[in-house]
Image (cartoon, one colour):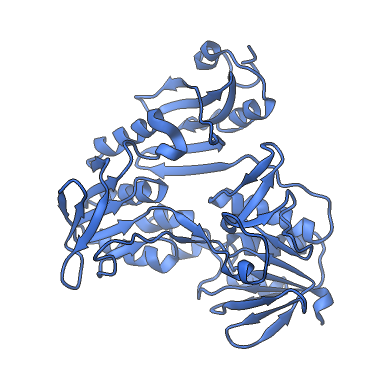
Length: 411
């Protein structure tokens, strides 16, 4: 079988495995090669800071497909292999083994890597980052032993890890330079809600604190901050964001800007190369601009669109940004995009103190983003309908739980 019938997917991840599945479901009969640098079968990452980290989910539960699926669907799964170069002219990728594989179409699902904290002591033992399943394995042992955990960063990874550590009985301190958790994602009001959630569960939450160093001989024993505080630590978890893995694309001359730049069909500036997931900065028709979204839903939903586009179908990836979190007894779903201009009003609907409510971010009188906390009957669908309507809303009616949420709030 030659390169004219071979599709190569770089990244044996949720996005990569889902794209392979979609290619087969859409009737592609050629060769599919799925290459990944990990030893594990393709898996879903959200559980690594949630159920798997807590020991509630078995390892097999995180896999996208069981091992026999790949052979049954004629997907050549190459694990512990890294693509080192991409020759666009020859339509070939080269592996770290020296093997070269030709392709007719190529999908880059290269993901992202944790942003590293560059401070003195950053290389000490006991300083953890969370991205891969082996990272979660190490952290599970650490928090299972109890002790003092310092979490650097009050974003999603930091707060979910903090929650898991508290539920395991650890003493947990969270440090963040911002005045509220999740400030960039949710703003100050809902940031304060999550701050209260962690405070009620016994987290020592220290905001407006910039980490200046880690201390210890061979292993970390404390963390210092810019205002002179020092916090004892048996282990540290750093969660300060992620950087898209674009090196392969950049070296091949593909357009990159905060990710691999792709159009609304997830195609790069090379018509035979596509990108998806954390690594892709895709043009979003609804917003009329490029967005890069780091979440499970983006990888899952975008993969099938990329597969169809690779097969020549006229498709557009226009799903609204979405993410979810589980922390203690709170389950949350969020959809939309607040954008660089922010919002001018936050409307809540339901019982915020009782942890059962919706929240809506309004700009110019219409809903640009929304979330629910533990409101699974209504869920996120009516929120997305409001966003897509681009119609003005009556904030008072929106907040009134006696008025049905779906399809009612036009001003």
